[in-house]
Image 1 (cartoon, each protein chain N blue to C red):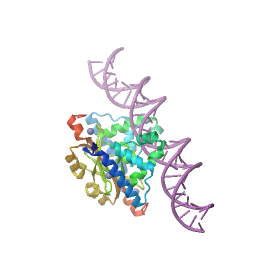
Image 2 (image 1 turned 45 degrees about the horizontal axis):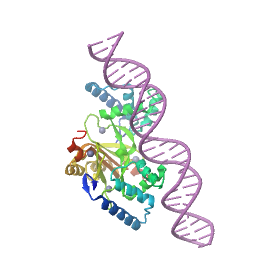
Image 3 (image 1 turned 120 degrees about the vertical axis):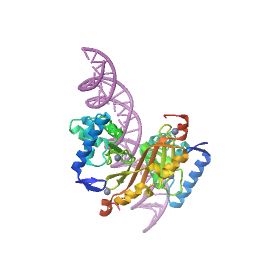
Length: 161
Length: 161
DNA sequence: ACTCCAATGTTATTGTGTAACATGGCTTGC
DNA sequence: GCAAGCCATGTTACACAATAACATTGGAGT
Ligand SMILES: [Zn+2]
Ligand SMILES: [Zn+2]
Ligand SMILES: [Zn+2]
Ligand SMILES: [Zn+2]
């Protein structure tokens, strides 16, 4: 059992279920979930936290799946475009999507003390920024919504008040 | 005249007014708006767009105000902490605050075609993410809200539809 | 004058991300 | 079968972003 969001959950099935779903989705959409891509997604699911591209590359290299940066970045680009992975801009890191399948505008809560990340729904375009965009004539295509603060665990422990 | 947000405005007075206000605020708060810091803010106001730290450093170097990365980063750190400048995480770039004075949670609209940036208010904690945070027991301290898309000008021109 | 502290100067290094080009392997049309 | 094309991968080299660590300067306070 590990953390999903800030809650405990059945991690083994979460990994295998998500991988199966990704395979099915790729088969249906004509996308190719190649060994490297599949393994990168699996790494992100196993570790279940935000990882830098070079962290991932390190694991890949240890397994003989590629040792140069473009290998990791290309796999991540594919996974992000396919919606299986999100990039956390604030951390320059990547995390497996917690709501795969649904098309959604992700939002994240990032603990500055323990670096855990939880994914929520944003639908930002509906709020104040959506109004501002409409007023300005700006067409929103994608949103980055990231809240930084303290997770429940670190709050309870009193870490970094 | 140049762009503020996506509107034209009186740029000369916008630069000098903001600089004066920053000076006044620093004097009152006991902060030191040194020549490098002041010049970095002025560069950001003049160019009126998001600039990378190395872009700024280039200008500084040409003026003999410092030629090494830490010079630019230290000035930017100061200006960001003081609230005169925001970092755009999506672009790894910095932009002068368009609402100086008010304490606020900034939100940005970033044109993917011409790279212009407009600042709006977010008050994100009030929306859906605020509810999710409350439900999860997460304490939000800071928010990153950045919308990417097409600005009115690029839409009208049909750039990068 | 001496001390302290904040700001700056400088060197070196680490971290993040891409451009460009070569190779391999599968598919598709002939 | 075979050539052409396409997509993924391998590899080199580089560009851009950020910080660590240490030396130096210069004013404020005593
Ligand atoms: Zn997601
Ligand atoms: Zn935490
Ligand atoms: Zn602002
Ligand atoms: Zn534009």
